[in-house]
Image (tube, rainbow, N blue to C red; front, side):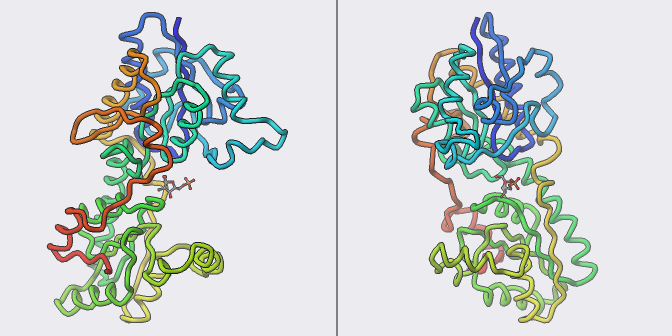
Length: 357
Ligand code: F6P
């Protein structure tokens, strides 16, 4: 009998269950005697030996279910080598659990931090296969991550809804979109929902350029403007500050998030009425969109194929529409950011979208 461990780690997203289902169905279908063990709440389950044996029925009916049936948690990579409050060596504990359960391999679904730990476990000699999960779409080595497209749908829908109320009242609306340090989600949701101004962490903004774009619309007779602002958007001045200084400045800031600061600046300079909307974690919730269901099923089946072939130490990814396997050492510690000169941004600028630069 082969025993496969599975865990979901980091922030959740809509298509985790669909991905696990893909792995499980392909394994049950193609491997004779296989048992899948689900570690509860991510790496925590592996560290503290907390798991449940999953059965084929557990993977039925979950294709459309958001969240994760085995739970998740954030276990920062930088603390993995630091003993816990009881002095437990976490890396050793994970290896002990793996050995005690006589696992053939670990299937790990997660984002950037998760991939650093997955690579660490690979270096420690464990068999690991990973799947790229995140609404942020910032994992190196794959064109797309599962969860991203579902989040684009939700963020776009939020901006669509703002359009009608913004137009009725003639207001400037800022919609703050998730994405941590990268702007993929904001870029796609912004273009998809006709935002007038899109501010991304990768393109530090000049507030006067943002104001100029709003004033231009007002002069053209447009009564409202919509800004899609990434939660990690940054001004030109702040981008020049040393990291430590920026951290200190942000800690002292009176604004709950960057959108409120941008809103106040715009109000001062234009006198227009401003509103801020933050869809927040709704962007990670609900059912996966059909695109993600297909992607997750493909990723899941591809991960199972790696296990069947005993090819370990890889993340499954997608490049130019084809499934690829990417060595974990290439993925770990690298971020896929938006290139400010990419063609999507050039085309957006061609239709008059301002990036505040
Ligand atoms: O990485 C996914 C993500 O939703 C980011 O877009 C966001 O910055 C972060 O997680 C929020 O984290 P938490 O759920 O821990 O508040």
